[in-house]
Image 1: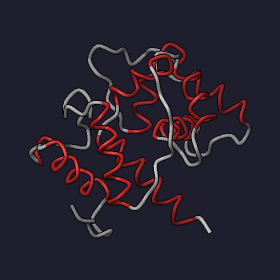
Image 2 (image 1 turned 30 degrees about the horizontal axis):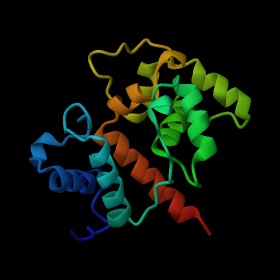
Image 3 (image 1 turned 90 degrees about the horizontal axis):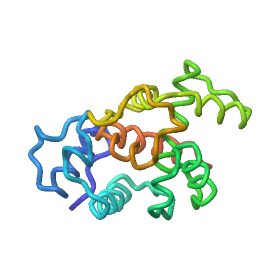
Image 4 (image 1 turned 180 degrees about the vertical axis):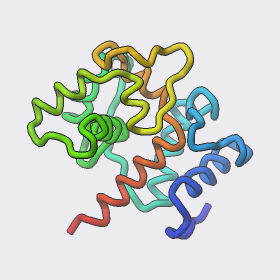
Length: 178
């Protein structure tokens, strides 16, 4: 597997990676395809995808440790714990949180940490999905407040487009570092 030219859009490059890793047809891999529910990406597959993205895009995903307790926590609590344990950089879920806050504010998020946390906690699963191009699986309710959503639910709502947005975020952050 080789690196693709940087001029190819991130979403197209990501679709190619997913087709190669999971032996999928290109038509199956759309921006709104759910990684877990439709493309068959499991926890090991997600790790493989992360390592391949790091290699092909020359980005670094922060090291995080998850366990059954973490994925079962209410989303605001789980994200606080992930933020404390992330070894530098923005995790996928940190990106989702920041985009949800930015989207709720119409583009400019408050600088105050407490105000950001309160704004995030007042949102619903549907708000979060709209902010990052996620798609809510049929067995989950969009009106569910984020305080009642578990990290595992958000994992199931992650789409190819959500991951592409995260990779674009990492690439942009890399470009502005000294």
